[in-house]
Amino acid sequence: MNTMNRRDFMKRSAGVFAATAAMRNGMAEADAATPVHCAAAARRVLGSAGLAPTRLGFGTGTKAWNKNSAQIRRGREVFLDALTHAWERGIRYYDLADMYGSHQYMRDVIKTAGIQREELFILTKINSKTGGETHADIARILEEIDTDYVDVVLLHCMTSGDWPEKMAACMDAMDSAKEKGLIKAKGVSCHNIDALRAAAAHDWVDIILARINPFGTLMDGTPDEICGILREARAAGKGVIGMKIFGEGKHADEKEKCIEYAMNLDCIDVFTIGFLESAEVDEVIALMDSRENR
Image (tube, rainbow, N blue to C red; front, top):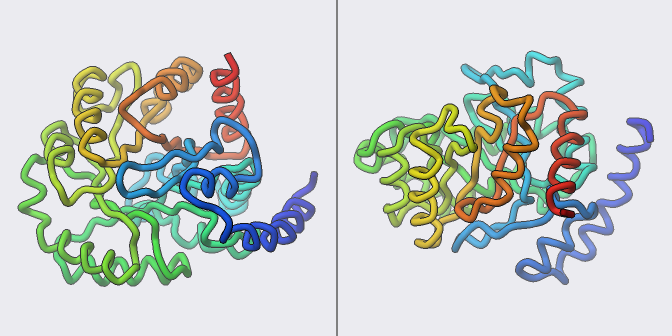
């Protein structure tokens, strides 16, 4: 199937998705929203927030900084094709961030592929330091993606246990955005074990994004330590998303082991992987299906 045919197919399918949306409810709703049946496309509910992304998310921030990433450096067409291909394979969770520079790419894929916004789960992250910056950042991000709401906004890269005190004004601004319907859920991504412990214990947090893989690579503690904290978070009703599943590519030759580990974990709901091209999406989907069908 060539690129033009894929685009035409998605546009024709959009009307069917919209017509059936009102009939869905809870997990039945989430499953019906996925036209492709594979382990990666299965929907999982994120704690008490009630949101249901696909089990696999498309990460857009590999080696990212200052609105640049490995995905962007691969070239615009390669990036857009990979994002669209993931959609065609049933992936509905896209992991963005202000730091990654990926918002406009997501906007273009939604328009070009004729995707209905309500079929997507979009998570992004902000680096605001004040409440005013947070309000401005959320407004700008909505404009960059050309959407009325974002499913999840996270405070990006918390590195100390006192982040709730330091980020109180930003947290208040995110509460306000949630009340207005601009975001559906809020939380943090953590790069420190004390920050992770604070996130697991804090009532404000709906969603946690945490580093986890079987080797402890680029993690905030040993796998056992991190899993223990994440179990506490889930028991408290928080949704937990895993990242760095391949240790930011350091275990690219051990993908099967990493995928099996992530799929067996009882402490995460879903996980995100940074993809650079369409073939990588297919490879992980195949690995997940292989593991699921054993």
